[in-house]
Image (cartoon, rainbow, N blue to C red):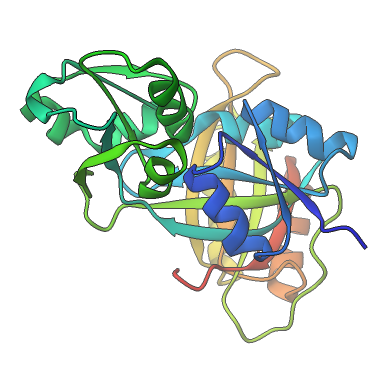
Length: 280
């Protein structure tokens, strides 16, 4: 049987590729794609069995496009993985730090290394991927240019590591979701879980609508791990709320709370329920 294909955004050497190995095992076929939308399309169309997408970084915050695509596509979140992110300053061999004028990388990586780049007075230029910036630099050998990517990217593309762990936060970590066409099988009780729900209120102009929604979770003693709002695609200046609950979807309090929210007029969509990553 062929190894499962798992899509990720970026080039080989990206932190997303490491997330593929952590979440899905070393024997899968990692499939690099240019955009996050390409990853969703590959999973939805059957070109990949699963996809791995970044959802938030401990320093730079959420990846908004991932949240928007989760709501746009009829896919499920099946698992998660966390990857420690050690950003490196890469350049062609024999390049000195003093020669550098600009640096290329993904916007999230540039944000994670803001203090270092400001100290060196380097112009930050955003590109679609960390490892992609390393590959481009190795091919073009642009004078005065560097890239921010992983040490593995330097090894893959023949670049030198001029500085290591240049991110502002030494505990810099990115969290990833694994997406698929089917929900994850119900996992055993007893280990920490995460259930992801999107909440939209039909009557969100009603005073206290969000308050009463969150109060329903508190009534059923469900711990809210995270809440994010994103602009609604249905109406301007209305919002969808992404909730992460510290419970299994199969737990009776979760079922009761979601039923009560629907009875109060909430639109709910469950994106997935899965064990929390061990680094959590």
